[in-house]
Every structure is written in C-alpha cells, then in structure tokens.
Image (tube, rainbow, N blue to C red; front, top):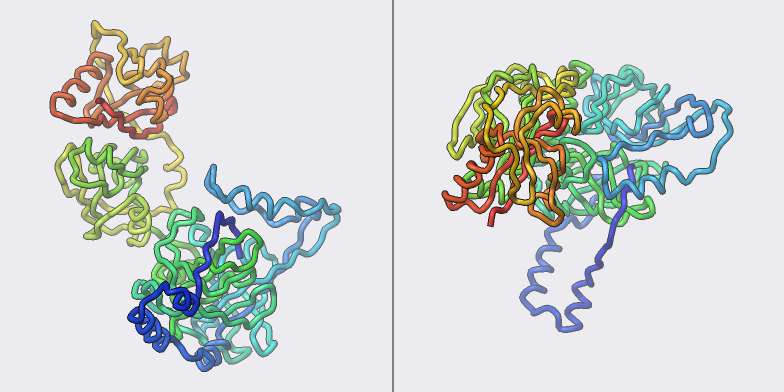
Length: 499
C-alpha cells in the first residue's frame, strides 16, 4: 500500500456522549438508532463466502544491492505536497552493501474468472518482479503469468493455471451506484498477515489524490494497510466495487482514510488487459487547463465549467482545425464536461476510432464539431512535439512598444527573439518587462512570454494589443483573457483584471 501524508484528523464524539452533554435532541437519537439497525448486524456469512476468492500476491526480484536494490520511488507530480512524506518513507533506509540479493514484496488480489484463472491486483504490487506467486487461503500456491499492466490506473492482470486447483471467483459490481454512507468490506493481506477482514463505509467519492491522470477514487474508512494493495472492496452484495490502492497516513498504518479504484473505471481496463495485454484508450489530441471564474466571465459564459483547450497536438486527431486553442469543451459524446478533470477520463474510456460530437464554446458561441478519436498509447511522440502554429507576420506598426496592466510589450523582432531565446515558430507580442505587484505579475506573466491572442483575437503588434484591450473595456469587460506562448511555443491562458 502506498502511504501518504496527512495534515490533521478529527475525532467525532460518540452519540451517547453527545446525548449526555445535551448535544442532541430526542429526534436525532431515534433516527440514529434506526440507521444503525439497518446496518449489517454481522458480516461473518459474507466474509466466509468471499474469502476464498481473495488471494495474497508474493513477488521476488533480483537486485544489485545497495541503493540500486531499493524499490523505486513513486512518481508524483512536481511540487506535490505528498513528496515530503514519500522522501521520508523511502529514503530513510541505511545504505546496504552492493551484493546481489532477492527483494520480496507482498500484496493482495482477487480472482474474477475461476475457469480462466484471471486474477486482478495493483501494478505497484508486481512492478519489476521476476517471479509472481498467488497464495490461497488454504495454503496452496500457483505461479502467475503477467497478462498486462496499466500504470495510469495502477492495475495489473495475472493468469494462473486453473487446471491445477479449483478456484473461486467474485463478480464486479457497479461503483456508480454506491452512495456516501453505504457499507463496504475489505479483505486483504495487511502486513503479510493474510485473510484480514475490515468493515467501514464509503466516506467520499470522486477523490483526486494526484496519483495519475484518471484519479476518481472511492474514499473509505474500512481499515486498509500496507499489503492490502490490490485487494477488493466489496459492497454488501458481495460484489467488488473498488480495488484498494492507497492510504493517507503519517506512519504507514490505517487512520481511516483509504482509497480504492472504482470498479466503473477498472472493468474496462481489466477487459483490455485480458484481451490485448495493453490498454487502448481514446485520444483527442489537445492540451487543456481549468476554466476559472475569470476565464468564464471573459468568454461570456454563465458559469465556470468545461475544459479550456490551451493547445492542439501536431498530427493529432483534431489538428485539422476542428478544435482550436481557446475553445472550451463543455460536452463530449453527449456527456457534460463539468470540469477539467472529467474530460481525460471520458475521452480515455471511449473506443479508439469512434466518431464523437464535441460541443465547444468558441468566441462566446456554442458550436458542435465531429471528430474521430485516435489512440492515446500511440500519441507519446506526437504529444512531446511542439504545438503547430500557423500565424502570419503582422504589418509594420508605428507603435513599437507599450505598457499596460503591468506588462511592457514590444514587437517581436530578431533581436528580442535572440535575447529571450524565443523559437522561430512563435509569433505575437513579446513581454519585455513585468512590473512588480502588477496584475500580470500576480498571474505569473514573466519577461519573455509572448502574447498570441487577447480574448481569442490574434495580436501581432503592441498597437493591436492596446486596441483589443480598449475594445474589451468598451464592452464592459472586467477581465482580459490572454493566450501566452513560452519561448518553446507551449501555450497557456491567463486572465488579467482591467479595472
């Protein structure tokens, strides 16, 4: 189980104590008693029925000893608040000798197909293993073959020889039907103890913990510890609605905050790993960023929603102009896009090659375009390429420089390109200086940034930039939406207050 750091935990006093202190009226007490009566009096029958399908996963791998033999550090987003704890947890081991050794690890998993011998676990449980062994509750063992892994969701699918023993499997349930407060049960292998059952509730849904692009975890207070990774989270019907994968803890032990991959996300990944040995996700080919309240206002949107396109990948599915930088995607294939987190998951779950309708807000108007999805796994080389720009040089202008909103701007010439090391593909108005404590400074605008568009209108000279800002003020706009390009051509959007 991957430990993470917590800032503070809050204890809730028992109902009886609150009653004694006069903190509750008689009506809430009656409702609380009714709620408790509807909870499981015992999960013994359920645990006994399901335990045989939950397995322990043991792995071993040869290492070179010393620092090279340590488990690799988890990759966290740059600047993640969790990095400090990961550093403390993984880097406080003393230096070892450099003799080769066998590294071993333990985790959990569960059988989903008894006839085929298919077992599901976490990728980080088996990552780098030379040997994977599935251990059953009766002491039996079977060597496992790795069918496929998905690092983005931390899932792995194994296969054992089902002819060598009778297997028991468990079905997936629908995690989308789970509500906050529903009872759940975890079975797994915490600290190598094996066959441990814990019970709790769904504490929250749609949790983002910074572990990957498709974060959408179920949070539970059912006790989960290291070794529970890859084990199932059951509903009270005995269906797997989550795969336990991470905890928040200052010590590595459970404090009642655990996270499970929802079955709605896992099922499609598992099916693809079984069939192809790899994932095949849909790909739109855009870079996106959050739509803030200021951006929404500058675009005339009633509320902040959707995902703003900050760039289009050259050679990608929408490099034909069907979707453009500055567009806000508000609906994809009939599904509303409420925020920037939702779009990557919705697109990834769509079949490769499918034609979909995408609704965008473009220059204040909604438009629907039809696009054909590419394959995400084929996009790595394209995604690293610079965004294609096709902008013509602006005509000479009598205004060669200007200052507004704390930005000192100038026409982009050869001298300034060389000074700020700006790529030849980047065109616009270069920011030569930013006043301290100005609106531009507070939004992270720096010298060398190039203003490509203002409120979705291309600008190539300081005069065009000034005229566009005056035009926006005349429309009663309080914010100006700027598309900025870095020296390498990477695009981003910022909004600046104009009052």
